[in-house]
Length: 122
Image 1 (cartoon, rainbow, N blue to C red):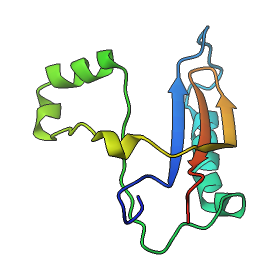
Image 2 (image 1 turned 30 degrees about the vertical axis):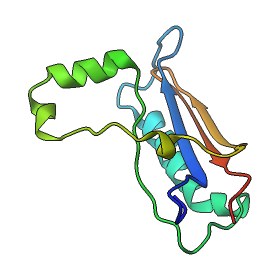
Image 3 (image 1 turned 60 degrees about the vertical axis):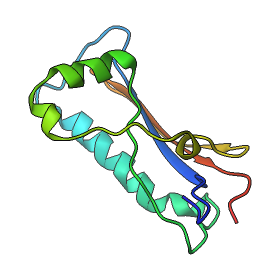
Image 4 (image 1 turned 180 degrees about the vertical axis):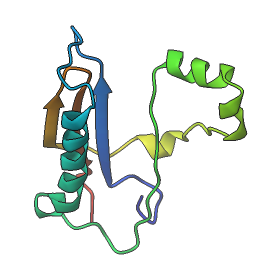
């Protein structure tokens, strides 16, 4: 978030179930390696992204489908942690540029990582 509370950069992890789930990895070792590779990519992606201004801050947002949100509200243990809906200014980014970073397709999930950069980053 810029000093004007506008997003300048966003990292998106899109996670989905595969069309036909299959897995030859009973201990999820391949999934673990793939998740590590995603996190390592975050560490090295500054080489392909523009520098973020010094006065920026950061927040973590989770975007779900409405069904997932309702499921969370129905579970009593999740009520101990308050989920807060994002404000509109936290969601919109001025003319974002999409930067693909990594894609994975295992037998139990599909995941892709990309960055969105605001055209007005500086």
